[in-house]
Length: 475
Image (cartoon, rainbow, N blue to C red; front, side, top):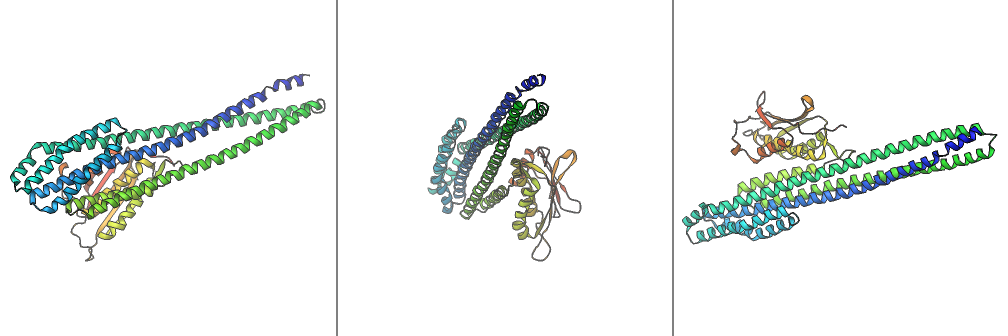
């Protein structure tokens, strides 16, 4: 009778097991819901990133157009040559459409829309000043035209528009950082929920195993004297075995669905990277068309430089290969791919040998592109300027560039580019530095460092950038 009473006391374990199974099922449903919700958030984040890119592109296009009109006006004023009127008239004819596109892109953002409205207010003043100057030159009143240009109104309008475009770009950059942080928070929440569900599943399995063990022990004790109870226990064991099999089958099915969902998300991310790369390649091609349609050599040089930088970003974006966690990439691989492109262009053309010595470092995907651009800018600058005066055709040799990515003290990454060229002519004032050096300084600052330029032992130049703000991830 004591054993029968003990068997009755063990009975409440069955509802407990059902309760645990119900809780685990609810947790699994929550995990699936979180995964779907995170996917929707990721899609929304990608769309918002695209909107940010559209706003930045429209703002830069508008600023380029007004600068093109001003350049044509200045050329016609200084030379009186009608050929400068062509870019001026083309820019003036397109600038209204550019402004409308910028207004459409910022319509949903009240602060940005107010800045665009301010630009529109100043645009009329600037276009009026440009048109009056052109008219005065056509009437052979160049002195009056020069006096009009020297007045502060036109310059003030241009400076105001530049300032407002810069604020638009800064606002979009801040919005981009905020959206990336929001996506990171959703990823952390999803990871925590999955870990909690896994723990609850382990607890359920342990409880089920312990209960099964106790039931088998009770069955051996009551065998022979309690035949009916033994039959009931065997039926219970069989039923629970079926439940365990069903639970295992459900777990396998859930795992397969989760793996399929992960593969789909990974494919979606790869497609996004590929499309972004293609869009940037289209921008590079459009810059090439702008180069072919511009006669001013200085403008052509700047456009070619911009085209090369956009092409570098596009190639790096297309070659971005995420690791298994879908958030990190190998920094050495992305830098090596950029250097390979540089070898195929500047290296072969100028006879420059580009060597890489890169440690395998795992970084966040958002940092990989910036690091690749930084390495490309420094190496490109070395290839263009370090070997001036060398005659490649005569066999003199173009020179050698070594790009290193290493871990320094306290696990701080360092990017170092050395060349055996003619060396730096001397320190440059900030006002005389080119856009490449300014871009290097700004990119280095994003990682908490600054470029250090010094003579290389044995001749040439050595540029080293410490990157304390580059977050390293464990493999």
